[in-house]
Image (cartoon, rainbow, N blue to C red; front, top):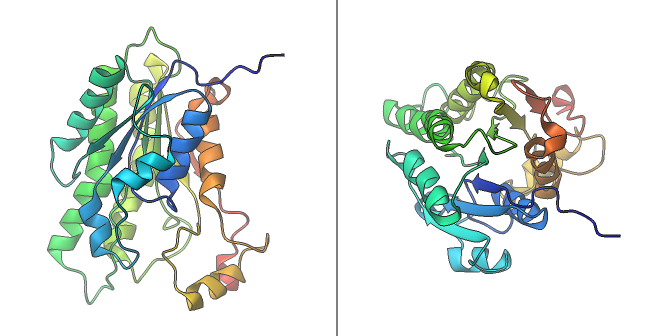
Length: 262
């Protein structure tokens, strides 16, 4: 018996595909395995600023099977207003269409109320929130509604479930994504394009130190942090035909995270 690839013939843009340990990499790998063609976006300079550091994009793409008929890559800085549109256009030029956008990218930024600056607030807003709206706009303009499965998947964090007082620029910008999801879903519902957001909870991508890993781990009843593959499977379902009846939702996929127990 032949098992059909559920996303065969579909084209997806996946942003934030910059590290093999990351969520974006796992999503791209999952969608490729399901038969989709993928345009992967990355922006290495952001990772170079972070404690986890950057990884050569060539190594990341090689681990996905290398660029070719079903995998392409574009480097784009979402702090630039025209970058979201350029990324979507690249997918159409490379593969002839675009069926899904998975806006997994994020600018990470620490900052308490006493430390936060206007510059960092503006940059997090631009990269995390503004770029997500502009990706949705560009996708809506480029998508052929005669094709099945128009999908947008945004990424928020847990700021709507508990405070994140050490990450105010990040939390505020991610909160905007949580709030925009229903509005964008309604704007595109008549075109049968779904818009949902995923809050993946604590995911082990190598960013947490030993103390935080242990402390958060005590609040995770399954006995482990989330894995990037946990997120990727959910995204694959949301962009498949099986997820067509879900729109305007923020899906908290956190493994029962007990914030109050930390």
